[in-house]
Image: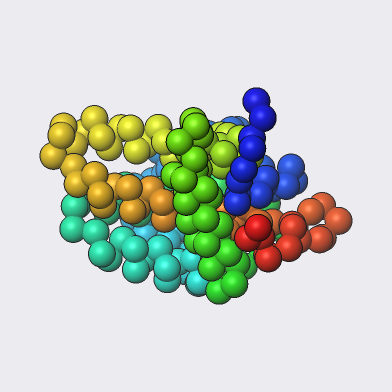
Length: 193
């Protein structure tokens, strides 16, 4: 497949979260002695300490959500995405700063605009991101699909789309905050074409 245009840059190979890490995180959440809510709350507190820029932005996005199912989904996904990165790269995950978060938001928006302007484009921005972070995006999409099924047509699709985009921004920002095994951070944050 040839990708003609994209504002999203590929995730460096050293920053790809593998499926086994995601399965381990899911098992950890399922097998915990505490309730899932308590486990998620502790993990979000850790996210807030270790990735305060991401945590604050995600909390703001979720606070705007009135649909309880969508808000719960966003909370769950924001925590599990963080845990997947934390467990996959325990010594190489750097904090996302304001410029890294802005880069992630702007590149996702720019990529969506490029695709919307081209009537022959068949891929969406999440498809492009899934090429670089396949297991993580598949996990996110699986849970979005489950929420749609659980919502039985009553879910607020606009809010679901906003929360889904927020999780994509988190994935982009955190992917580019993983240092290589030699200690170098990924591509320059000046990623807009």
